[in-house]
Image (cartoon, rainbow, N blue to C red; front, side, top):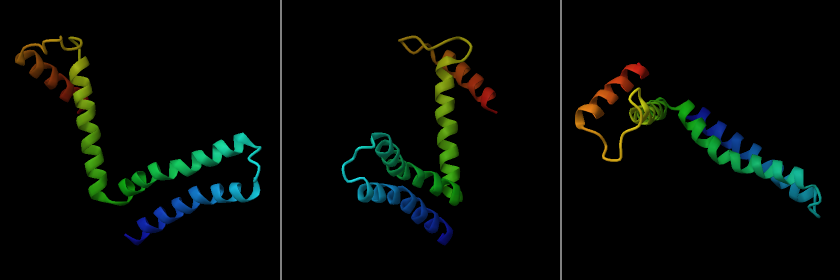
Length: 107
């Protein structure tokens, strides 16, 4: 837990420090490329928090993996061998067959 909090704090400092330095040193805002990179770093820290949580906590890892597996399965159900489902959704037998094929492909 302490390790995870340390990583979150480090990510926050690494994301905020360039922005603070840029604001202090580039008063006129003349370097637009630097400004874009600094803002990219700043906003990326927020998405990095979720990655740190997932990497540091077993429960988060399992939940993310389950979510990704189910999302992939749902995506594959619509595009497996027989093609996408029709607008009517197809018969329940067709849907079950596609789900079974998708499960076999993910295993």
